[in-house]
Structures are given as structure tokens and as C-alpha cells.
Length: 168
Image 1 (cartoon, one colour):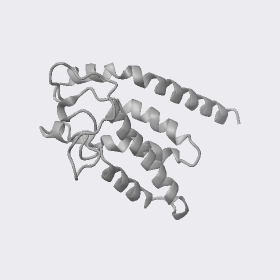
Image 2 (tube, one colour):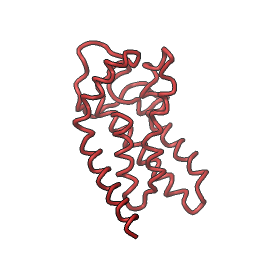
Image 3 (cartoon, rainbow, N blue to C red):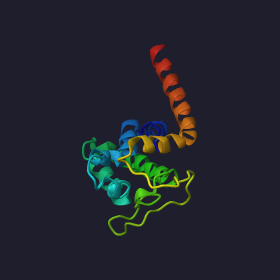
Image 4 (tube, rainbow, N blue to C red):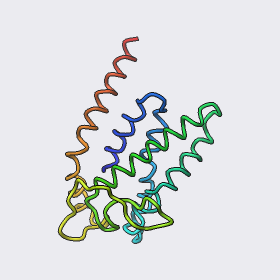
């Protein structure tokens, strides 16, 4: 899923009762922090491994909660966890790049095995990696059919929220 798709889904999650919007967005975007390593040759081997697992999401939730007020820590932990876990699930189900295995390494560092309960996208007939940006963008665009409904719903809720604030 594209970062904009993760942002839209995280925004929608953050609108749910008992979740904090900023923490859900951070949790939903944080697993892709490994993109800072994109220029390195090792990126294809570590993307969807080191930051796309349960240990990373749980550790991030606990660490981020330290910045919250004590009475809000559990809500922040829950929000980051939900955002991060949904990110992992979406990447596990919408993966058109098999360069590091289809899915995510959910149990890393215990196992590098990629987890994907099902995959809604078809991997390309030839190997493509992130050092071929045009080919990767064409793969990413093939997943837009699954992302567009999230964009539309998130934009409509955002617009509604914005209009309600401006009419007060």
C-alpha cells in the first residue's frame, strides 16, 4: 500500500471512539520508516522485515506512550498498536513486490518468514525491486483499486469535520 493509503486508513482508525487520532496516524505510518534506508543495497532484504513485525509495533507503541500524559498512556498505546497492526495487515494482503517475500515478517526476529493470509495483488512475472523506481511505481499503482475507497472515505470525513469546525 502506498503511504497515502496508510495515511487514509490511519485517519479513519483515529476517528473511532477510544482512539487518539495523532497516535493512530503515527502507528499507521511508522512501519514504513525503513524507507530512509532506500538508497542502501540491503533495503530490499530488510523492507517489510525489521519494521514490519509485532515486536517493532509493540515497542513503538510503548516508547511513544512515554510522551503522553499518564492518564492517556493506555489510549496512546492502543491507538499506536491499532494503527501499526492494520499497517502490517494491509501490507501483508496488498503486496505486489516479492523481492523480500510476499507479506511481512510478522514474527521477526524469531523468524524471517513472510506472513500473508491472502494476497489481493498479483506479483509481476519478473523480479522488480525498489532500485527500479518506475517499475515499482507501476506495481504500486496496480493496488490503487483497493486504496481509493479509503481515500474517498477519509477525505469525506475530513471535509465534514473541517466544515463543522468552520461553522462554529
